[in-house]
Amino acid sequence: MQVSTSNGLKIVTLSWFLLTGNIHMFSNVARDAHYYPRRHRHERQWTQEPEEEENRPQNSYSAFIQLMPVFIIIIVSVITQLMATNPPYSLFYKSSIGHVISRETENLQVPYYVDKNFEKNYQGAELQELEKTVEKDYIDYIQTSCWKEKQQKSDLSNLAKLYRDERLKQKAESLKLEHCEKLSSLIGMHKGR
Image (tube, rainbow, N blue to C red; front, side):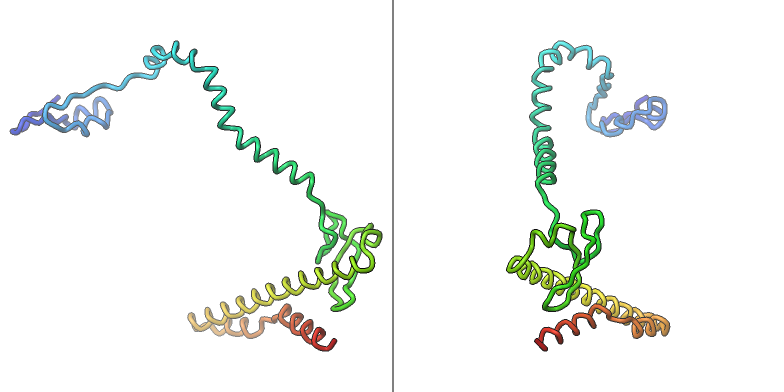
């Protein structure tokens, strides 16, 4: 069904849309517009079969070429994991990598964990250098944790002011800054030496 307008445009009515279910009919509103039905999938496949057979070897080769970067990334990551060694120490107890023996650094008495072969591999100057690294990592960890505690306390305090909540204010005031206290004691120990 079509309705002609005064300027010669052909418009497909809503009833035609409801009968056919083709939503693209309304996009063809123009002078002397024509509707070209879509080809069905089986028609397209029948006409392209000989062409697909010619391109099949090339398509598998191009698929291999396209997947090559993925294969390279996987191979490199596997090789990297195989070559990676566990660090000689950890600031925390980690039985999964064998760091179960507790030690302390000589200078700042920072606790750290090592594996059972540690004393064979690290002695003298190597041990002193490693302990300096342990202390540096520990101080970095304590500083970061202190900053997080201060941020949490500040956030709670600001929320208490914003919502005028006495309970949040008390919680913010009672929040202990344990890592900041440890950092202060480490700085005091370092200055005392």
